[in-house]
Every structure is written in structure tokens, then in C-alpha cells.
Length: 65
Image (cartoon, rainbow, N blue to C red; front, side, top):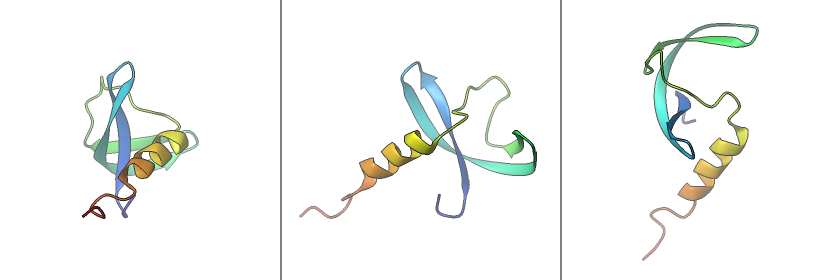
């Protein structure tokens, strides 16, 4: 998103927050995260639906008035 790498971090069972991360190498089904996450944080592994909902919530932002 916007030329940066982000993940969705679980805040509560049904609440996620967008977090900017620094990505390292990638291989097969893994991606190295160099900065932006703690080892014990849970993230969304497949974010197509989550990201589309996030972007949808931003539609029209700043267009009122």
C-alpha cells in the first residue's frame, strides 16, 4: 500500500491494526520482517479481504463539506 510494506496485527480477537514494517528476504511461504513487529504478535497471513475492507473504509475521506 502506497509503496510501503504493511501487515495487519491482531489487537483483539476481532480487531486488527495496520502496521508499517520493513521487509527483508522472502522464500517459499515466508517473509523476513526486519522491523515493525514483535516476535509474539499475531498477524493476518492472507490479507486480500482485510486490505480491501481497510481501503473501502477510506473511500470518501476528506470529500465531505
